[in-house]
Length: 188
Picture 1 (tube, rainbow, N blue to C red):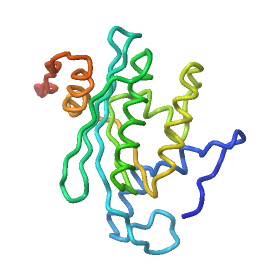
Picture 2 (cartoon, helix red, strand yellow):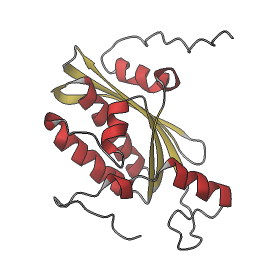
Picture 3 (cartoon, rainbow, N blue to C red):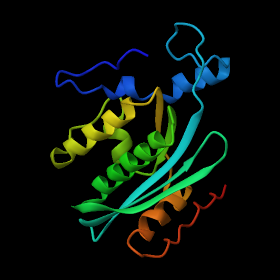
């Protein structure tokens, strides 16, 4: 695989490191695994990751949680405190990095990442908003980790669909799982 495009600072650009949902859907629809237009390729077996971070208090100690599902159905978890203190957004990034490190250590080459942090998804996406100066290093670290995979897709999901990763992040602080209610159906 060719190296991802780099910005002027030499960092991989997120638009090359993270497949878009449209590209992935097209490849899945054709069954080719081809998101490049260069012809069929052998698609790596994809791992699914759910990650979440918490800062208690905010800012404070950072709890990291992740659930990793291997292609064979095996389930692995991460629940730990990060070194130092930080805000909730840094905790979310650190949880993503810890999950990617765990997936890489277990031999993953393709990942689909789910997070309930819209900040993480926006800043690692193809058109990031204005940078958050104190998190620039953590975002750069996350981009580097993502670029290490042959395929990577990052998706936002609502918090109630990320409850297990949230519970693992809270468990790192010795806190009980948060009561998360599913969204109510609207009346017509």
